Image (cartoon, rainbow, N blue to C red; front, side, top):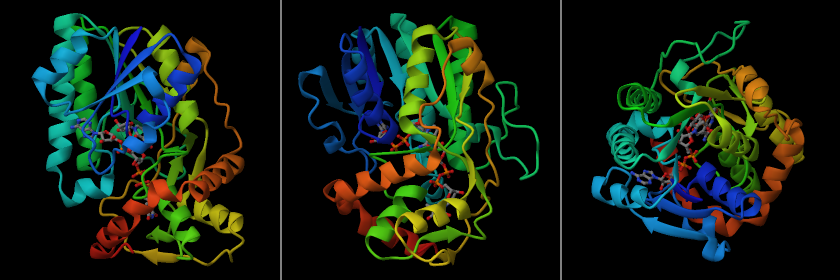
Length: 332
Ligand code: NAD
Ligand code: TDX
């Protein structure tokens, strides 16, 4: 099988490519990645002939048409992915997340290629802390930020292309991922690399916001299950019952680093900051037999800390620029 993986030099995409090469040796992988600030060739190092990297834009219709014509399936990870960046400059989010998805949909429609669309739980908006309901496949869309609204729009394009044109597509909406190769702008890698540098973690607002953490390998195993056996036109929610407040995560990291429990700073909150995400992944578990392997968040976090300690050459070049940008918004 020939698989086109967009965004394969980013966090989740790179982990997906590593996992695919290790567990599905019959698959030939082509990565299409623009190598923005978030993409890194080094994340695909050591994979040899099994992977071809094409540097290009998912919104480039002619390039996408050519690559899709040579593929049996497409897994679309490429996106502008960081909420804080979408507040500073929404345009790249509209361009990549909406126009990029449109270009892929037109190509898979023309060449009748199987398509899987990787999306986020943020399309559903947020929940109150004490809401007993979690997000399901039937929860109405209610995105808050430029990032999540462009992801929501891209999901709706996929649904329309399935219904109107018979495109063979599935969608998955996953909760917050952690693990190796995540950019240092994101919450967990930012605090881990701060702690390695002897800098105090930075918590937005009071730190009461809750995220539903899942290890990236569990997310990608679910994407493979959906790609292989998912029903065309169906949306699957991916989550591993990992709800934690940001304060709890910071405290766990401080403990891992042997630092005092109050050794962190409160910084300016994110405008429009979603309060809580929580996923009910019953459909995925019952229909496709998926379950997470990383059920102990603390040991997953320890393994992630060890990875960042061992791969300073990978993250160090991005660190100073990220912290300089956070200083401008009062978040450093
Ligand atoms: P990331 O920012 O780490 O990686 C994105 C990748 O896409 C980078 O390699 C970047 O170079 C590439 N890219 C950006 N614009 C492009 C363009 N126009 N053309 C081609 N390539 C382009 O993101 P991530 O965290 O790995 O997220 C991957 C996908 O998973 C996204 O669609 C995101 O919405 C979704 N998702 C992420 C999470 C999470 O917790 N990180 C959770 C649920 C869903
Ligand atoms: O320094 C920080 N301090 C802090 O308290 C940073 C960077 C973040 N936060 C908070 C904001 C969020 O409540 O931590 C939480 C997680 O923040 P992010 O890592 O920016 O993730 P989030 O905004 O929740 O979105 C992530 O999960 C869903 C991904 O970036 C998205 O791509 C994905 O769709």
